[in-house]
Image 1 (cartoon, helix red, strand yellow):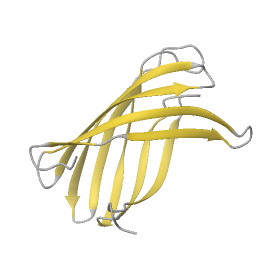
Image 2: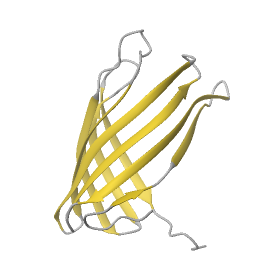
Image 3: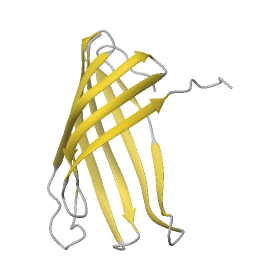
Image 4: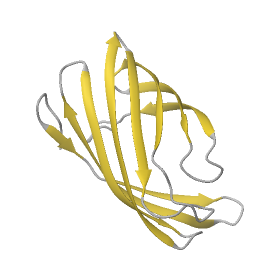
Length: 141
């Protein structure tokens, strides 16, 4: 469902991860993201979901909240907190994490992100992510 100023929009996302060495599916996730456009320059993003970690043989509830702020032209500051219930790789309770960064979106269909944050699984290290996103409109071939 599309969003508008003062109105939430919703979607559904499904993901599977694969270990390329063992060629086995290691996790499955379903997420429901929701976006509220606060203004033409600011959005509030929320999400809830479920994850099956096949390596740990465990189910997790996942959640997140973030904000996107268009600071000038194609430049957007993004920040979020996210987490999951249950215990992580080493049997410890997983604490919520965060990440923040800068997005360059010169046109609606394409953006590049540089994000710094805290890893939620494994060694709990800080991470730096460089990502590119291409968006395709429904019905466009």
